[in-house]
Image (tube, rainbow, N blue to C red):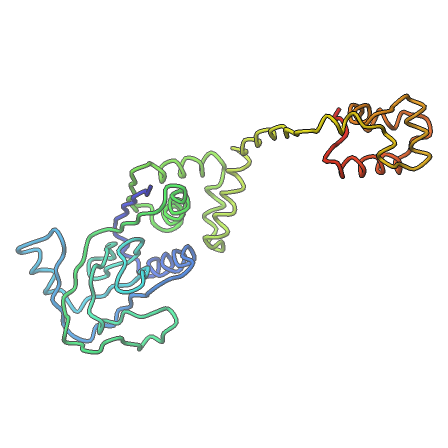
Length: 290
């Protein structure tokens, strides 16, 4: 089951945009692609949900300036988890659905001038959606919710976030309840460090439930074995004399006793106890548990 996040807003400060992207990058284990402002021609654009004059106005605004990161899913552009600013719209958060290869979409390991255009003129349309969107497994939703909370706390008070399980709101309340607000504002902490702090406080406030007690082991024992004489265990002379003095004459008598009871027999030591346990183990038997 997944949790859907929607996040939107405008961050005009270019320096803060770059700082946010640098921090968000530490959330991903394998960043796919960077979008950098390297237009090589004028493109046609379609802003999803906008038509008529608005569409013409956006088309006239290019060459455009997108900046951010896009997760990669095998090939093409993955809309989930993007964090992209459209600087031509004052730093509005957007989601890119399609870009020409010649725009400058590059892998993190590639140099800035890298291009993947085999036929630059073959596809010139750009599809843009307003705001960000991410779908993550419900059990991992708190992780992404913490990322968005830290971004909002540090650099972007106007970031607007919603999700269908209220994870963002709940994590924000826990940050306050745990007294982490000021610590998470420390820009020296990357996302892994923030998550470590949050996890430690969460575990301290909500310790995991103790595991259920182990189920008793049911042993099937051959009664003929229990009726056998202690002599069949072939114990040492000292151990045999100790048991005989206590009138322990059958194997059944032995397994009804605990280690503490055996140790209470005069001259019975730890070496004799281990000898008895070893012989019983060979028969699939154990001493009585106190």
